[in-house]
Length: 459
Image (cartoon, rainbow, N blue to C red):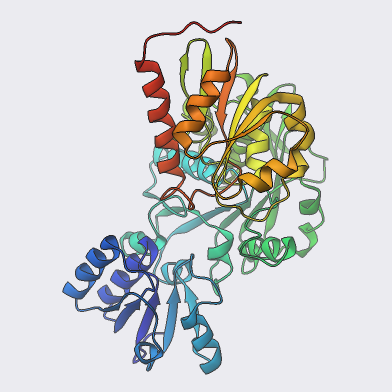
């Protein structure tokens, strides 16, 4: 595929760095371009140049792209980027980092996508397959790029891959043995022209599957019921309710998680004994039970992981209780639907901290929920004015210049039994490096409050 064709990688983030290293390790002539110019990028440039990889920072130039046979693009690079425009004009093939990693990978790929729940399901599946004795790699949008682990895989490997719409938009031959679509709700409308564009990118996860593969979908999302006939793979569904007899999959019956396959019923776990709480995590547990089941993992291993799995950092994670006030870190809630599930899973009364970089969603869709369960809201970041407009007149709304200030103000207004919930509904990139840094700042602010002289809150 790459014989005699110089490759240019666009983007020196984690994915681009990994892609360049993989190509160099395979003996491919490769160079890299990034329009950023930070100290971190400069350090990565030095690392690649030490390997003999030419790098361009601080802007893309057509002269640097001349002679390129294939363009490998990191997920965060938009279609309006100069290298993408240049490639379209000259008919140069464009490949995403996941597609590149796929072509060098061996073994069984389980791909997980959806607007919410991807990281949790990916992590649960990784733990199940590791416990089953399989050589297991957990990668993709959750952390390690696929290109970084591809050379270490073999035919017996299991690759558990979290994959985003940005990554799926640039696949070509990518074909997972098991493809899971958890849900699709409004998100990334700052990148896509409309919801249909976002949805179509997501559904590409099934595009190259055959009748020997497995497709897993959420039966509780109406849209997914209608696409069964268009799938080539064997379809399985999961549902928080009982599945109709014509559908195979995982569902809840008499408070038990049950799998139906080939006319047989297998009890997997008790709903009340699952380690993760909340309706969204019930969906995650149901979805995670199916891939190992259809691939022949002992149900007792699936059960053991579902009973003991711990929540991910920054995903509806209990931080502490101070003066009778609970603090919950849900910094990973970077869209409206994810925040909706966090609010639904929280007891009354909630003091909500939200805001950040706006992604184009309609905040009004959760207005009734906000009115019913939220006492007040403290807003931060670029999106604060837009969120305030959506909830105007429903609850008291305050603006804070920093997350630390929002935490302190929220605690100051709280009473014994209240919950301060960080569930931003927005990405973090206006104020933080990522959602992890945002969550860490929240946790430090809670710790600072706790370190001060104790103040008894009135009930």
